[in-house]
Length: 174
Ligand SMILES: [Ca+2]
Image 1 (cartoon, rainbow, N blue to C red):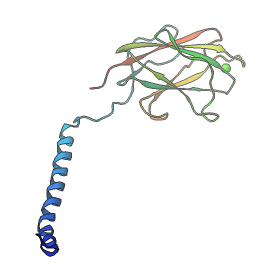
Image 2: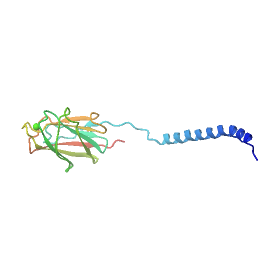
Image 3: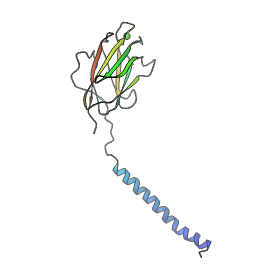
Image 4: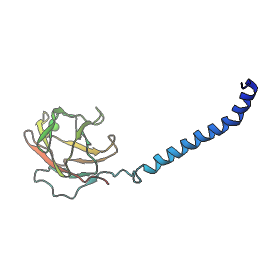
């Protein structure tokens, strides 16, 4: 039978070896995991697309993104006059009868966009324009939070009952 003393002596000799093996295996595993990570993790920022503008762009620029879904952040661009809008993506309503606010009054309204590769049509309808200056808004496309993307605004206000259109071009990032 092994005495307690000799058992302790054995452990003293064997334990460092066990610890070393475990830590070596750990390093080897995480190294292996690291090797399998994709090499390219650069996030492609959104851009202004060179697609032709719609006749009813009302001054909106076309936008481009490498990611779907991307988020469109919407705010009132001029006075907080009570503009109410609806937004459609490729003919499907994604935001209905929403009252936009200026950035100092409220954080921008996020709208998640599931995009198809190529051009995607965004229609913004001016449902209500209480101050009669038309609907004036800014739309920021971002792949993360508001303030990290690029913004377009309609230079010409959209009269109540009309809608403005622009493209979001989706080119999947590699
Ligand atoms: Ca207005």
